[in-house]
Image (cartoon, rainbow, N blue to C red; front, side):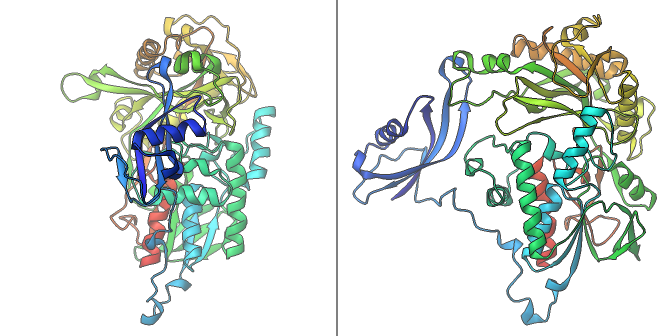
Amino acid sequence: MFIRINNFHIGLNDDEQNIANKLCDELTIQRSQLLGWNIVRKAIDARKRSDVHFVCSVECTLSQDAKPQISPQIQVDVPSRLHIQKPDSLILPQNDTQHGKQNNDEHVIVVGAGPAGLFAALALIEAGKQVTLLERGKPVETRMKDIGRLRSRGELNPESNVCFGEGGAGTYTDGKLYTRIKHPFVRWVLAEFIRFGAKPDILVDAHPHLGTDRLVRIIKAMRHYLIEQGVNYRFESKVEALLTHEGAMVGVRLANGEEIEASSVILAIGHSARDTFEHMQDIGIALEAKDFAVGVRTEHEQDWVDSCQFGKNAKHPSLHAAEYSLTHQVPDKSMGNEGMGKRGVFSFCMCPGGLILPSPTEPNKMAVNGMSNAKRSSPFANSGIVVQVTPKDIAKHGLGDDPLCGIRLQRELEEKTFKATSQAYAAPAMKITDFINNKPSGTLANSRFKPTVEAADIREILPIWLSKPLSEGLQAFDRKMHGFVSEHANMLAVESRTSSPVRITRDKSLQSVSLRGLYPVGEGAGYAGGIVSAAVDGLKAAAIIIQA
């Protein structure tokens, strides 16, 4: 008999023998009747710091004579969560050749080697399509050197940085794989990461992550495989123009003047390809302004976060560096047509045991982002603390109401951030207590940021309609995690690349409503918000092309 026990509690100090005994007690069976077991889902429950434990789903194999006690949390003869098959929609239909179709000869261009583009290319090439993958940036290992020069010398390469290059912006975050979306492709994406080098525990952990260092190796392995399978994988190949004829895609033109023909183009450009958005607006492709968020990145000591979340269990060998997720709704008259609306303030891309990185993509503009390596071993934790922004807000404050208004706000804030320091691509910083008290002290807490931090008044960078709710949100977070507002913690400006401020309007077939054969996908298209959701979105477009 094969069963799964859900909501099964495991203590921090339980070893395999203890777990097996608890399983037998739960099922009211003899130890000899439990033939084997696997944990297939594992989450930390730290709601009570005095009782931190794991909540798990466990699959058990029982002998034929076992007669377990069945409760609502026990499922009988269910498929194993660890067994994952490739979705049928990503496989070329077997009867295509019988009907004379030549879909396997169709050439597809994929623009962008982030998760959406990489997984789309993977599905397409394995289905027998001809695939050209175009990436404006550099290979991930060369990209690391360019990021290193930005951090050590303050030298920005606009085409190779935290946002542009192989792996996309998600490579230099934390490799977070947690997603709220429910789709059959999600677990297949995780399985493919394992295939290319991730640890199998990403299928088990409730909040899996890879870490930037592991993700770099995984992306290199994916690249080598895609090239071996026949993908025309090209770096430093910036798409300058989409080529169209009678409302349909016919190819792309690169910045070097080269033209490549294709009737299907998957556009996976990421959230920072501002020049591509401007080109699409110029040629009449339907775009929409969308909500996003901007703010700062805070930096706390990881020991403090561990203590807040785990209490006396902080540093227990069974626990990793602690995370947090914080939200608050600030009353705001400008958010509603009548009466009082609510403006969201929330933590974003929290990186335990990580670093803050400079993440600009344009000269004389500055932004920051966070990352962690797999071990999350830095003494600092960082997180974006950001404020909800709507297109109506932007129009109200004089930056227009067209689809690219959000980009104008981002640029304005990033230009102010750059000008707030004396050294190029330094980060203007402020103690959180100074910001709350509106009294800049000119001193800072310790920071690992490179190239450097400089004391500055962040209220001079963020307009009051952003700084006021940010201040209220930080104080609310301090009530939830006492010590969040601390003179030992800094805030660095500006966190402006939380998501794309633009959505490329598409129909049910995932094609642009303006242009047949153009499949906008991922974060840059406005339909995803992380590594896994972007990969799934790329796979959805690939599946449509495969099954056409």
